[in-house]
Image (tube, rainbow, N blue to C red; front, side):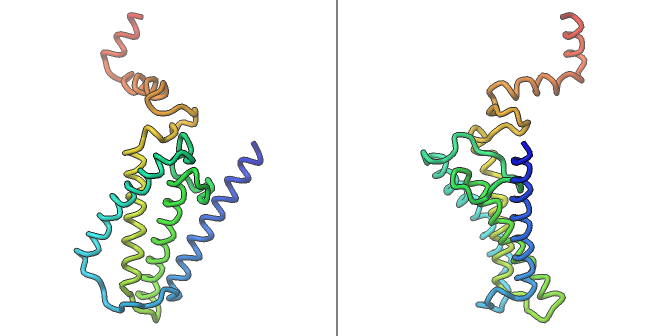
Length: 181
């Protein structure tokens, strides 16, 4: 148990450290300024929206992959983002990397000597779109996801039934039925 906790702490440190490094790299202008102009907001919106079906396609292919884990864990900062059996962990992690690098570049442009470039905008939109896509994947592929309660059961296989009954206990009908039992 202590080894599990230590591993979780190590992966959290790993993820946070790399996201911080990406942000600092963005502030320092690490992205090459390929285009110094800003991108029209409608194109950025289109890029954001396009990320969601792309994530659904990629994760959908991984769902059919026989080497993928039978049940996926919800994205968590304490889990290894490099395990091939859990694709959502990787895309969750890289989404935050892209977002941090882009926000760092924008912060560097606002408060430093660097210009806010199209690269920064694309990184922010790509990272945010990827994270939105990961969230949508947890909804679309919920039958592949582990239960959040930590009981190890898949949703719809006993764990949700008890929570549904528990959520209705506040209504008058349930209270009356419970008294009759």
